Every structure is written in C-alpha cells, then in structure tokens.
Image (cartoon, rainbow, N blue to C red):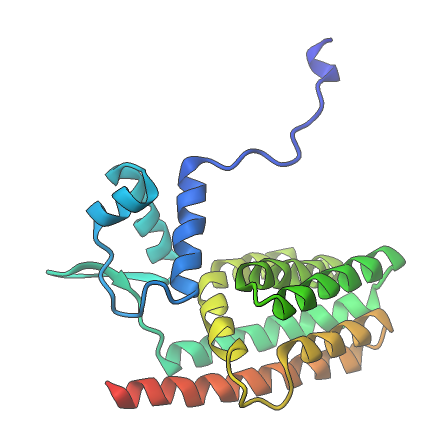
Length: 228
C-alpha cells in the first residue's frame, strides 16, 4: 500500500489533556465544583491520575473559556457567573442563533431534516434518562447542524468559545421547573419550523426559547447574588 492509498483519519484520538479538560469542564458545569471553589492542584492530580503540568494546562484552558478565574493570593477558582455576564451571552446567542435558524430553514435539505430530528430524539432521551452529559453533547450537535446548515461557520466558532458558560447557564435553567415550557419543547418548535422551511417561524421559535431561559437565569442569578 502506498501513502496515497492510506485512509484519512476522520476522528483523531483524544489526547490526555483533551480528556482531562473535558472531565473538569463537565464537573464544573454539573456543579461538582461550586462557583468560588478553589481548584487545588494536588487533589486534582490524585483524583485524575495526571501530572501537575496537565492540570495547569487544563486550568489555563478553562480560564480562557471563562469557567475558571485566577485570584491573586488564592490561585484558580471556579468562576462565578454574574447576571451581567449572562445577559451578554444571551444577547450574543439571540443574534447568532436567530440568524442561523432563519438561514438554515431557507436552505433546508432532506438530509439536514433527518439529522436535526435524530439529534432531537437523542436529546429527549437524555432528558428522560436524567443524563446531563448526553443532553449537553447532543444539544451542541443540534445547534451545530443549524449553524452548518446556515453556512454560518464563523458564527459557530464564536458560540463554541462561549460553550462552557452557555452550558453552565443551560444546566441552571434546565433544572428549573419555573419556566414557560420545557427546554426540549422549545427545541422541538425550533426544529419543526426549520424543517418546514419557514424562516420567520424559525427565528420566532429561537426568540421565544431565549426569552424563557433569559428570564429564568435572571431570577436565579439575582437570588444567588442576594445570598452573597
């Protein structure tokens, strides 16, 4: 076999650093590490079975995602989420997701319809099974399909850089019973509008979803700030 006959690697294996980053990101999003809690290197090394170098690299990466902050004299802690930060994230999501949903609906294909419906089915199963890890993964896949279908690849890169903080807010609002309608119902409405090719309805469905989650996040974060 010559070099030209080798099959391309479509999914490279995750590195140790990638796996540690994913494990710690999930722990922060799920609330295993609380906002303001110190991230001490030695216990993390022992729990994860990795070197201090890997932990330090991971902390720097999560700091860039906005999940960790470094305080003078205290070191790394889990970043607190303020309402002002959350409001800005929701404003960015509203602009990018509304535009993507509209464009995806205008360009919808049978193949894209099938993938969106499959993602939504898996997401609903994750919610029913109370599996937050699967819910977050499939939710990202669902939105990735929308942005890809819209041809908004640069916008998706922006969303991915915010994904850690978006997932923290999603965990907060997902667990709340005080909402207009369940998150999966909102996403079903978004999916239905997109696969029907109705750009106006798709944009409106995204707006309703974000109106609901923004209001919940504002109430919950205000309650947390009042405790402090």
